[in-house]
Image (cartoon, rainbow, N blue to C red):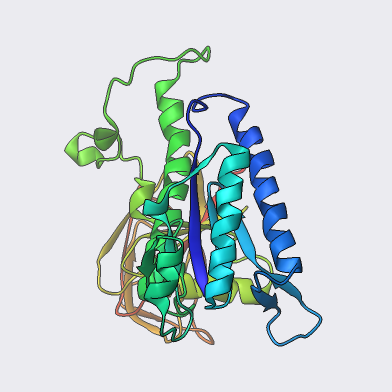
Length: 323
């Protein structure tokens, strides 16, 4: 059984630079009290790894101002846990917010309501969300993990977006200046009056690209094929790589100051039939690209706009200028 039993608050310490360290010291005292209760047999927890007699038993886990306690569905253990928490409130001055405490049964527990009444907390059910992460869910359940992945992608995009935003909003001498154009206009296409800066929140950026171990390369190709509904950019030391789905007529704007002139088109899986390009030194006209035959990996960009149209998915590669 898992009990989320502690949500702690201390009045009068918000904003104090020493309060986080003091809080950690106090929580260490709670951890010692839990360890003592477990060593005396009042709380059992679970063994990790499971099934190994000599394995260490885990009775609790501390996360900032939250604590997970693991114990058997036993009335005596819950009663002792309540006493430990009461003594902790007395000696620390911290308050346990029972309104945020929950108890979860792992498996079937008949008297879960009676056990929850001991510590006056709510009864929760698994799977659930704990500290914005799924708890008790299948590790292969995409519906559970997708929100976590999206949250990580959003935070990464925000950090990467900060670089061009900071460049555009800072003066040459390093002093701060006002933004003359809002960010939505900056990321709009040039034909709509914007600057054409790519909005990283609308694409996926992966470092490593097609360099290094073979399994890493195959993993990167799997990513761009699996999420082909979003623009994906693979970045390496030498080139940028992007998937061109067969469902679109692609118009690629070349930023000659940072990329080119070397470029290429690589088929994925099957042969790319009827591939047509413009803007390259050696353009293709309804040409088949396949391994064992023609593969356009050593072409040259000649125009500011390159167009690509094919009946199959392609990888577009273009070199990055070192200077």
